[in-house]
Length: 327
Image (tube, rainbow, N blue to C red):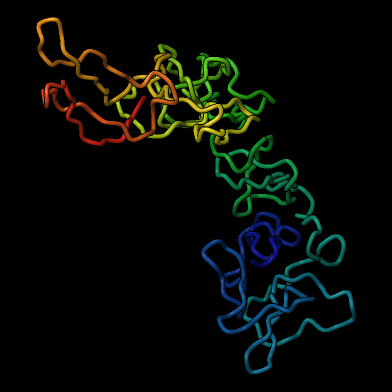
């Protein structure tokens, strides 16, 4: 990208000698006039790194911008023919280098000097820390109004309405002020149910939070455990508080583990084990049902009763092996 002063409009550059009067018929001479009104080097040529008014041609020749200020180093401005007939007048400091403020010449009632502000987000307000001096028309990407507090946000500028986006939209050093607030609960595991003990007020719940407050999560670090879970699982989940660890105990069960996947406060088995025995009417029927009420009954291979039958005068239980599951 060439420095900003090269692309300023001709109407700005010519103020020193012409004010706001009519420009010459061909103000760019042998240079190319761009749609924006500036003079650019012909195709194939390059700007001189030290003297940006000078273009180097592919054949070794040079063309100097006819709008350039007079040389102050004793050199000649005659670098070839030009049909503009215009020498560009003079700048107050005798030259113009990158980083300097452009002097548009004395105010003539039509083009006074003024400050232009960089407007990256095109919201009509510019960045107070990035300015150029000029007259008449604004350079490309600059505007007359400053005061933008966030020039990367088109919805952020003085007098903008405040919206719920966690930004200072109206540039008053406050964020989302004056907007309706809702209570949000932390949802670390993203299952849609929050931790009742961790909440905050905001105009909208951001990612990782939920507004739902009718029921709460019993394990906010385990996405499979939440109120209303209907699935069964053959292993426990780690229910240890933050900072604690879960490990296998001597009996092979998980220390600080839990089977309560549906957050109802109790453990429910998917499969039950029944024992068959003779009843008072001498029938062979199940008399006890062993359910998964604690960790020792879950996660192991148990027999699920299929039927009770009498064999050799004994009431027996026919079983098939299944893996216990709980929630």
